[in-house]
Image 1 (cartoon, rainbow, N blue to C red):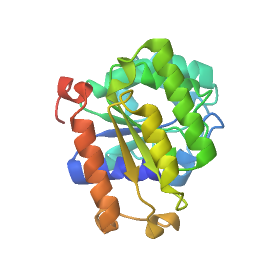
Image 2 (image 1 turned 120 degrees about the horizontal axis):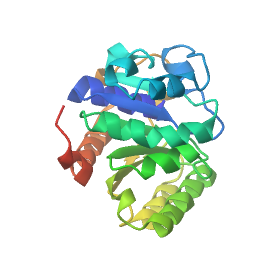
Image 3 (image 1 turned 90 degrees about the vertical axis):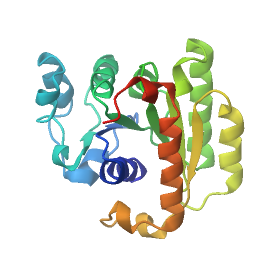
Length: 232
């Protein structure tokens, strides 16, 4: 829900094209929940690759393409998908798209997340404010910095979503662990209207959520990758 919300808000309120990538190692159900089931497993990845990553071809491979916020579901063959993801992200961000990566609660071990973090693009990585999942994500990102150096994650904005009214101490632990390693860390407060899972519009969000999303957009705008790409 968090990744989908961010994508819709960036598309509707800020007129940006958004690609939402399901990077949860277990596969997740982001695309199915958002726009109805997208069949074919890894077909979306491989069809687009054969067509040369052309944006016009991309339109027909993504659910929700007419919303301005497109969802690329979990790949049936995640390792193959990871090999294609870097090229895909750099292809769309060069045209002004923003990429939101839904890391789920198990970021460690996701080849899709690792591939996304290696690209020269501004990324939003969403993780839940839960002690177990969020701490795994913090450890993963810290290891990534040690492996690839501090430059790559500098264009990453981490969004910590308070999905179940978790204690603020979890957010503080993540902030302390990632301070200086990513561009920004934004906390998205618990919103009861979103927790229901019902259909929603960015214009109907709670004021606290809207304020957090504005902070997110400001954080994205401050990344070096954002300054390198067109505004639309």
